[in-house]
Image 1 (cartoon, one colour):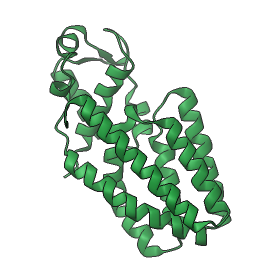
Image 2 (tube, rainbow, N blue to C red; image 1 turned 60 degrees about the horizontal axis):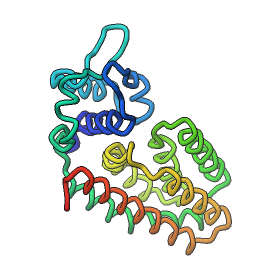
Image 3 (cartoon, rainbow, N blue to C red; image 1 turned 30 degrees about the vertical axis):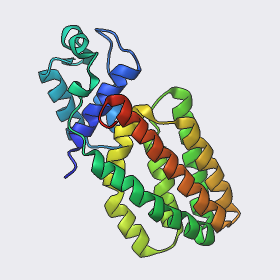
Length: 230
């Protein structure tokens, strides 16, 4: 069972750590988090409430959430103790599943894509570049890119299955958000788009496999740094 608020908690803790926030620094607003992570406002509020109850952040009515000094610094050396429970086996299984599934999606997308799908894929890459330049999460354009490829297959069953799995995909995306290798993501998205535009199914499939394998490797590296796996 996916508990979205716990995944949002991990994102916020990663954000605090990676951005090296200092006591009193402001966290992204509820609205910004909803847009960045593609989640519901209730999940964001629940995550903020839990972190507030744990003394990690302080919520100020009308102003937002701010890093609270004492508890955060007491625990800074032990990141793992701060993190909510993570079903890493499920996430790793999902990434393995994506390697095979999305490689086939990319193959069929190159064969069957429409001009409309190409336009959406191009826009998703522009949005991804904007996120990189602004230092914000690439979750929204990333999900748009992969979801559009599924639609580009023109296979209704693939589209339906992908739609049912997207929440699971989103869980791993949020877990990795601050640790994303954004330059690699941009490279693979651009190269996959070229292959799809040229209707080069074989290259599109190979590139997608390499892309997800790269994500898988980065995810394992993140877990190792957190002390979750050896």
